[in-house]
Length: 329
Image 1 (cartoon, helix red, strand yellow):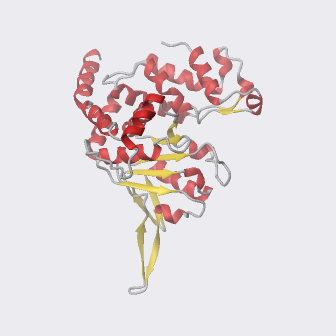
Image 2 (cartoon, one colour):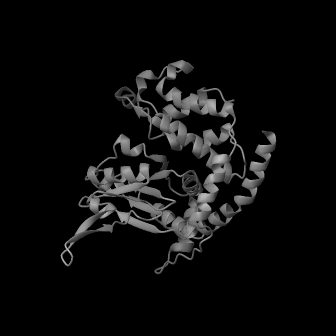
């Protein structure tokens, strides 16, 4: 096994060289926000969708657009609005009078990278239209099912303020996202750099493609091969299980949690940890990989009780306590 791990490590060292070039291209337009950029690449490598939450003006949309250009992938930006219909997203069948036949007009979802901008502005029937696409990687139009291109990645943004006229994502929809990112303001020095670079009347995005969709598919196969020890696997299971049964780990928090994370969280936490190890150019997963990515995988999967809300406790507070308590291998 040691030889296999060494071989995987060598392959990771060779195949991860494009990561540096990818970040270099993204840094041309995105200043700071390394946390957001790294998590976006992790989602891409781990085949997991991402929800980005932050106030307007933090370059969420710009970062997704830049990523799509750097990958040389098909990209569609869909602005979610209250009057959007499911057919506007996935497509519809149109009657052609000339031959009396229906033909399928595919919607913008047929692309490699989908930016669902302000996803909580559209009603539930439109949000649910994404469910089949995100989970099954295909959509049904009429009586026909169509496969989506690979890779297929949904990056959705939402605004945590101005909640009037919005439709909060239900738990079933949230659970389809591998990661939920909370985007914060840049530092003072970074903001000065943003001013120097972007305070122009005609902005350009000079980003060259450094990787293709086929390269991404090949790298994903290597990410699957990254070694993860049984002790680390047990650690991941312990973390997720503690969100459902904290008492088993000596935590008196059962009254604070209404619902814990599902087994999908266990799968996503494992895949995200492997992808994090890959961008660190390692062929094996460490507990630190799990801790680094864990909050982003779990923050939208732990539903707190009314009692927790009354005490000012959030899901993030509970997850941090679990990570501080569960024994690290």
